[in-house]
Image (cartoon, rainbow, N blue to C red; front, side, top):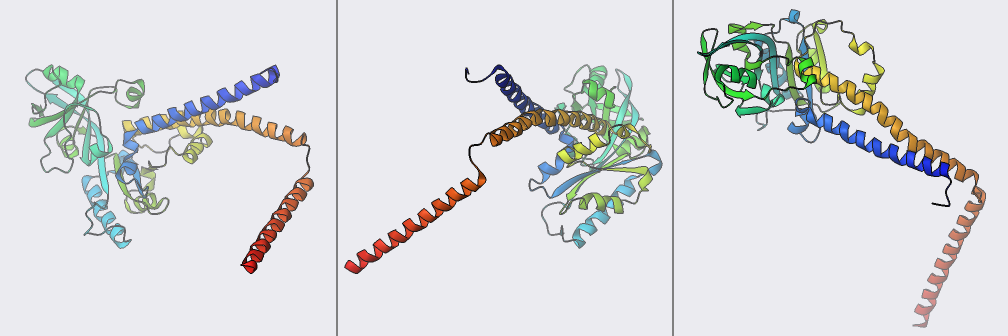
Length: 359
């Protein structure tokens, strides 16, 4: 250490610490992305990376119905067959999809009567959004019987004074529904700001429409083949049949890539502006929050990795200026080594030839 100046030691420490912090922030960023499970279905569905997850978010004016969703499903199946991306003989499904809408319902039993926020779901909703359950299980949005409900722990405690209540009955609009599961309520500040500020129940969309107050279908999600970039996104955009001014399309699969986060940084300020009355579900609000955080972390990561890189470049320039050799001299030496090697090979071949002659 005595061979280095104080300035050199401090410079080395700064570069080393910057590099360590870069790796720490990179690990934190990857951890954040991995925690957003409802943005990761395409990767878990197909590890080869040729599937994409697309979200369609609608305004209430779009008037998307269950018939709209089913009609698009049939159309999408036909498109994938025509493009030879799926066949009826295939053991795998052509795509997986879910839809949902927000609203409110009144839940009652002999003990209490509650009005809670409700998310009406259909299709494979819980495949896209595997909410944490304290007890019970999920229900399939495609079931013919639509009288199941999942309530959160707050509602469970107020209605029954317990969380282990799977199989219990409640009344919704004078119709009996079976509690199939109890969801753990996300108490984080981000979740509350995103829309999970009150007790929440998950029921079939048809039940929400019949027995509750509904804002209509406001979200449709699909995981489908994506053989080339933006194929899935453009296919959904071109065929869903809802006016573009009433819809926002998002490709979830690559939204946290470095390129996408650069676009978030580039659109800083404008990103907060909204010209469509699109209703963001809570999971989209959470994803947008993490996009902002990850974009900010990306800026810090670039700065931190830039410090040691600049130091190495400066060091390289200094070493180059202090060099005791010239390119011409190096080329001359390399040429000499090549000639020497060539001569050695020729001598070796000649000596082998003489030995053969002697034999």
